[in-house]
Image (cartoon, rainbow, N blue to C red):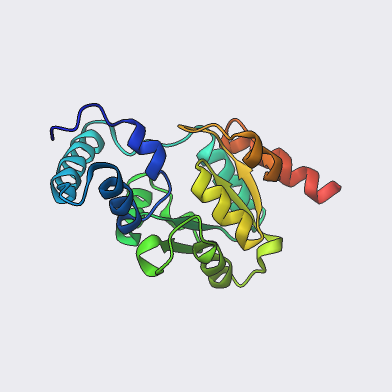
Length: 189
């Protein structure tokens, strides 16, 4: 696209809805930036990737979901991605049936780091935010969860928390199934 290596843009837009990501791209590369072409190329890449390798699943996902359902926790997905796309990926990973609610970023006007998506997910679960835990891997997602009043748990992936975010976390786990220990500790503590 004539912009050179732009992998760093992933960090700048991680956890944002598509309209918010477009603003960041245009602010970086100018109003004339062809976001539609980038979107087309991105979708083509991921379509090929998922067709060849399947939807990637983070380590410990199945163990955590089995534990949560087995212990009667309510579970929601609060993603900046469009809801239809989230549901498609959850279906392809064979985990959609675990979730009581799925909230996509296209359902709300404000994107992460605003608290709206987590407040909506809590509402759909019929739970108060302070009684909920959010598992996140991005700065925007963590800020969204914290601002909504949830217990924010960092599961690092492409981004590592800075000191500011680290101080706000409820916990940090290396894998999803490590969250089981946190929940067990909460029950006994």
